[in-house]
Length: 228
Image (cartoon, rainbow, N blue to C red; front, top):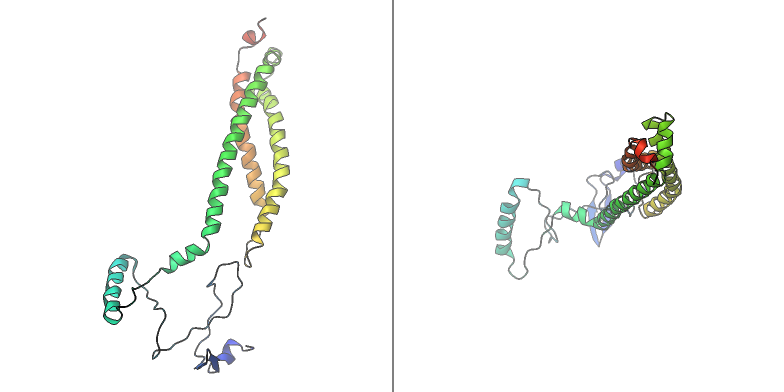
């Protein structure tokens, strides 16, 4: 309207064919989902006219009793239409129900993907250590430590994990960026989120592979080198 909060006070406006005077100005607030920009909002005070909705604030421990009292009073004035009510917190939750459902689906599939990956790494590390059992025995005879052998067996798998992180990071950033474009008000994607995920993935891979690597490194070299 071209007014400032100070100059708007006392101005007369016409809204839906009715004149009114501005008695206060509020800061902008979100009354629709964050996918939509904040729009103009008018609070109308019409004490002598009919009402569509009545807003009531109640104590958390008195909700049911308040609803019963409201229903009793309502029935004394209106018998043709049943009372209909809702809660602000549930209405707000309903605005982002689709995003919450999407987040849960992504979480569940991520957990499944991690479990399947760990099973694959565990099986691959078991197969690799069995294939290199004689090499491990020779290295132990020549003085190799348990740590060096475990590192030798683990580094090849860590290379694969690092390659997967390098491939997944730009794809994850792109997918997140595209999804956030649906929101007028949105957060920025911080780099440390992907760094934390990468470090976590390497840690999970190390925990998965290290069991077989340490087990192979601790094996008696005499048994490993025994002729078949």
